[in-house]
Image (cartoon, rainbow, N blue to C red):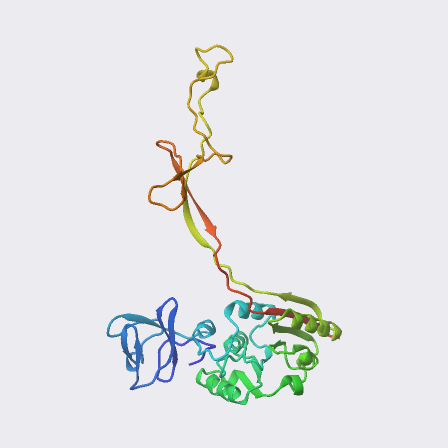
Length: 340
């Protein structure tokens, strides 16, 4: 199987995603003779072999779905040993680097943000899928053990032909590539030290570069070096997710007073006389005024709405922002190198 292409039937050795709930999924490598324990009971691996991806499978106490792995599903299910890039930032990286099938991409990340812990490859899987089936990814990892783990995992995921893993400190030794890349991604503590090597790796007709940095001071420094190295269109952005909740709200209709014709109200009365129509006190918004009263058995004052008898209500739908939002992840700096 391959993360870069889909297949229909599950075979032994395939990686699958067990979907138990929206926020309850597990990656699983199918092996004969093994059993996976879930909250719905035991699931035998043999029950998965030969069925289609997307099928509903039954455990001893319930059911779940078995999904084909994708870079997006892998990002939220991979084993976390270090911080990783998530789909919000990854999608922006793929779009801004203008990646298409057949491109050659270079990525580096000594903090393992791109190879996620022991080489789980959150961003790497997405980059490979974007350039497959004829493109290639050159990825650089500072830690030897993580580089070895990445090689093993890419092989298990059927991506070995599309990626080359290098154990190398690109800040000290550079990429060692000459004009073969369409795009370069940097995830380094000192990305400005790798800008010249990245420029050397880009094709003579130019290309795109992206640098991920958690601190604005890193962004300032790398922007200066990019400009000095003849990169143009330098742009920095931050991607934050803000989910809105759609709700229906019921409110009383505002009191606009008696809508009868004023001539009818004054009929039978002399000029200058007002009618004896009772009007309810309302606030500036037309809503019944709020009355405060001491409620028996309570420790303080509570408010009560004075409402009209038989008051009509109206309903409308609106979108409400969340009370809490995910915090800062990092800054994405993009730039373009044109042919000289």
